[in-house]
Amino acid sequence: MRNADLVARDLKSVWHPCTQMKDHESLPLIPIKKGKGVWLEDFEGNRYIDAVSSWWVNLFGHANPRINGAIRDQIEKLEHVILAGFSHEPVVELSERLIEVTPEGLNKCFYADNGSSAIEAALKMSYHYWKNHGKPTKKNFVNLSNSYHGETLGALALGDVALYKNTYQPLLMEVLTAPSPDAYNKEPGETDEEYALRQFEAMEQLLAEKHDEICAVVVEPMIQCAGGMRMHHPIYHTKLREACTRYGVHLIADEIAVGFGRTGTMFACEQSGITPDFMCLSKGLTAGYLPLSVVLTTDDVYNAFYDDYETLRAFLHSHSYTGNPIGCAVALATLDIFRDDGIIQANKALSRTMADSVAHLADHPNVGDIRQHGMTLAIEMVKDRKTKEPFPWQERRGIRVYQHSLTREALLRPLGNVVYFMPPYVITEDQIRHLAQVATEGIDIAVRD
Image (cartoon, rainbow, N blue to C red; front, side, top):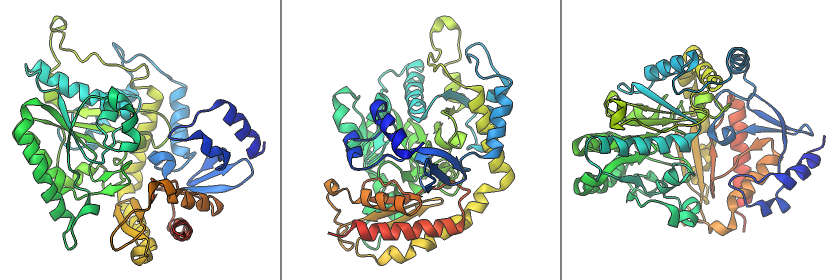
């Protein structure tokens, strides 16, 4: 089969996500035949380094033999069973293992199908907790400016990226928004930590004034991924945890994209030294293989729903594939690789290579910022480095980097004018240096008038 054959069939029947389909009149689809390690390969033998981990999900490469083996073993035993009134070994073992590796105090696991579904479950749990405690007026949520938490209506309402949210605004619940600690906006001479502390003052004031009506604050610790990979100092979340406890408000940590080593530690919350009331995980949970998500929460939250049936205090929320055994087996294999192969420690060398490989761009006239937390690095293209004046979004400069990368064996899908690396952890240092070279070439092409 040629690439064009599958593309022709695709365009007759498939509606692709986050895509203006008319773009494909001039921007060809890339049909993938197979993957191995960091590589994706099309039907004509062209290869691409998956620098964005296929939307931030792939941790240990495509067709990983250990994960493949876990799927084969599980599928011969049990493919799926209802999790209401029934259980199975993979979901029990996975819950035990997640409780072991996440921050202390997260002792209960509630499963869903994807990241947005995990956020929805956490929102409902928080509201329902306060209702069960006789505080039904606590029904509002707080987000951060430039945040993103998913595409379903509840999760979308918690976002603050206009590109995703504006169209559906009439359908969404109202939320309270505090200013982001995004270090890109700090003053000259101000440190990331100083700026985060200064930005926290507005959150403190909001909680002080309105805690009686707030269920929870929802945050993406350290990296606002869909908001352009904007990053901030972990001290913000240390202060936020203290304030949420003081004012009687839940803290929901959305670690769907930043968990499982993306920020340099297993979970971003570790760098703040905190335990949230809810931690939402997905994406890397199954290393890019299968849809699965989980909300971890505390005994205190769990006990608020534990009562006789007649009280109607139970959390009546479900998904058909909740706790799917094959997905759980994959997640267990993922945790095994972290444990057995010393992934977090090994990634430190890869992170240093990522930083070194793009250091030469710091003085580029059209690079406004290079930022990094662990295995996530972003380069922001701007019209003027000194003023950080952005390119008009309509010019779509990032697409030019993407198009160039495809000619140089790389998949670099930008976020607007932000070029970023979030690769699988099996990438080599030479492959990282190649990506940096491709990104440099692409940026030079993209910024030409």
